[in-house]
Amino acid sequence: MKSGFITILGRPNVGKSTLLNCIIGQKLAIISKKPQTTRTSIKAIVNRKDAQMIFIDTPGIHTPKNKLGEKMIETIDDAREGCDIILFLVDACDEGIKAYNKKILNDIKAQKCKKILVINKVDLVKKESILELIKLYQEELPFDAIIPISASKDDGVKELVKEIVKLLPEGPLYYSEDEFTDQTERQIAEEIIREKCLRLLDKEVPHGIFVEIIQMKKRPRKKLYDIEAIIYCEKKSHKGIIIGKDGATLKRIGERARPEIEEMLDSKVNLQLWVKVKEGWRDDANKLREFYK
Ligand SMILES: Nc1nc2c(ncn2[C@@H]2O[C@H](COP(=O)(O)OP(=O)(O)OP(=O)(O)O)[C@@H](O)[C@H]2O)c(=O)[nH]1
Ligand SMILES: [Mg+2]
Image (cartoon, rainbow, N blue to C red; front, side, top):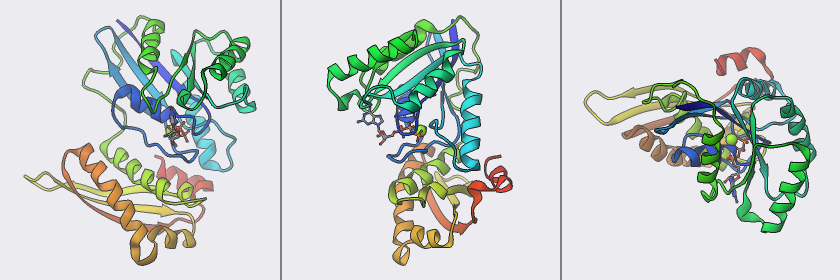
């Protein structure tokens, strides 16, 4: 039996969460075009006859601009510590090795674990430029494997998983076989709502959002949940934008989130959303602690 922890690392927006979802074959981590979508580490356990793989999706590596950012970086460091394999994701569209990726290379160099360079989004580039990137990275670090993939098109991902199994050490079952993730249904539902905010809102507004479910109750003998959630934002002006004219934007957020939550819970959902202001919470240690317990 082989087993181990595989941490997915890389700059924001490179496709880490898309890869996690592709590997497990369902949507667990939220995805958006905006950087810093993922804020916490998300575990997904994949069981095979010969191996147990625990994948950890992490926030994108960036220079923090507030206390939330600092917390995200701590999360990444924790996920890296003691892992068996690092999947270092880079963008196939990069020309050469970007400065932020050089820094990541430097940080992981000394780490004892196995390292796989994953070149993502190969659907967007020509083969020659991928080969060029491979050459450049090979000169920087002796990776245990280099795999080009397209996470959104499920291309090369099976090969990547094969390589991971090869590199995993012999080990015990860390989780019972019926466990699939460390995320609760409540957390997943909160993230689905936040994803719709990221997709429907612009500029700073979605980055200052925190979603909290305050009520999630199944009606007795019915396949129906009543869910109430608060969308916190950082400024009064943001509240108006989130609600929209005659409540249209908030309605749209709910309409998009509800079917996905229903699919996850395999039940009908009655979803009620509220918007509240929590001034500057991303830079307030106490409020952060309250949100990310
Ligand atoms: N063309 C293309 N787009 C991709 C691919 N993988 C991911 N994307 C897109 O890249 C964007 C970012 O994807 P995410 O999975 O949210 O990226 P991430 O690395 O988790 O980002 P953070 O959570 O912000 O660190 C989304 O718009 C994805 O649809 C790919 O293989 N090809
Ligand atoms: Mg992500």
